[in-house]
Length: 422
Image 1 (cartoon, rainbow, N blue to C red):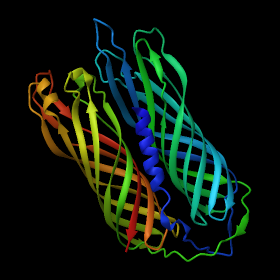
Image 2: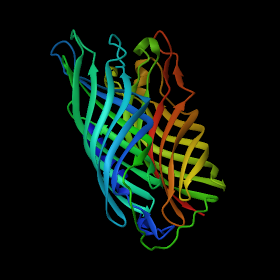
Image 3: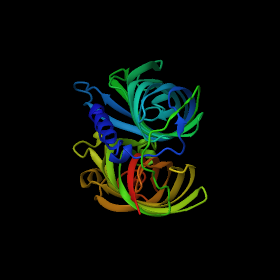
Image 4: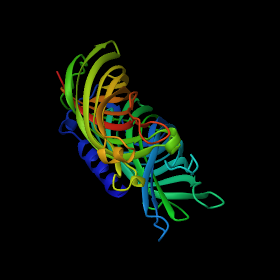
């Protein structure tokens, strides 16, 4: 199941990454910095780490049991690589990276350690290919082999299972060269394995959805002749509207007495639209934006028998303000935050297990995030951003358990968007 999710995420976002306006750019001088050469940089951001757990059936004792659990954490990392600008508008290269995630992922079921799976490091070796939408701004996709270092502490084994897992890594991003020796980037990435930790009768397959910002020093950069092309207007003031695709990692749980407070998880691809207004003065940009995202997040607990799906999220709405700084006339780095509403359903079948009825409600919460937006044409901009949305309300029932049965979702989104600007 993890394979088709990753393939859908990679293909959908990669197909969206290279807009038709990518060839329209103009040099600011007769020469521009070449992208060819080595570089070394730092990454910081957030990731949603999840684990698909599959427990084999024990004849006459226990049925097969599958569950996904996860959480959102901050992470930092390093990256290094080499670029080759083999054409005025195309760049290819190779890159190595390592992120320290320190994810302690707990299985939702009673009687197991809260830190069932601990992941310390996620690393990758990737090839990447990009198109220059201006001489200073690169849109790229990447893919390669991944390595996940951690351990599984769950089961009847005396010692934790400590293995280096090998999997795959895909991603995309936007990178802007601020000077001839320094560049910043915003990137979305997904790392997964098909063969995870094996403990007793259970397997654990971790994956990570990441959104991060990085900055790198470039070495040995030379000047090259700039290609001639129409100029891009860089007026950020005005209205804009557009659409977005995103990878989503989400979790929710019941109450702490019933399930140790741990979180059931799901990973999906969603999409929607946004509309807003920006005002630019000097190198600062302030704005307000409304967005709506549609999804089909579903949280499953096979311990409920036929009522496996106990909660669903089908829409996320937000109204946010944002504040940004123009690192180049065409590239904006920004932070955003505001109010959010999460359309959530507790299924009738699952609620019946707890002696009550299902419910559907729009839960109020908040959304925070940040990213980079770059102009790729006179009226078109492309953005890469990471968002964290959490419900502060919950759906609560007075069920048959010692405490109330409650659902309170939170969603991490790695989003790629495009806007038409007036």
